Length: 122
Length: 111
Image (cartoon, rainbow over all chains, first blue to last red; front, side, top):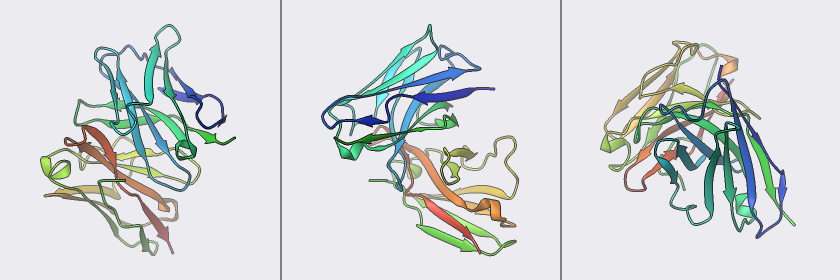
């Protein structure tokens, strides 16, 4: 059974870089059938797609965040990482990683990790 | 700034049928991109409920059904149960934004 687990600091200072890791178990991130995505949700608000990684095709980002976001992978550890630079309070959110199933333009997210709350505050 | 609009809340009594609409535009639902639905219980991650407009993953009760018409899609819950009380989100792809987009979310309350 595929499982995803996010990890990283729960508190980041304004203007610094938010760094999170998603560890995948029960499946390989190198599997060319799937993309791997990051989604965030400010407390009490809706969901926002951040970006995705495809082992055979690279990375794709939400244009509203593209200038500050980098998604990378470590295949030896079966991990997908997220970095968000120059954070502000608006980046405070629950961050989820999820497997993307389907094909470009049709992807849905399943399953999701449990999520991790990142608070941006000095 | 969600591009898919849902009603903020829907309420029903146990056993009743409720529907949640998800309205988009010509660059997402109207362009033919499929819609998927997620259920989010308080304090937990979203969970896939419907994919490809009307398909249920294994384990999802047939009380949940999805439909699509033009630029709108709907999620119906029949035989409403207390465990259905949650937030529900639709999701699709927007070709103008070149982005996966989510709905504004709907809170379902069971009386």
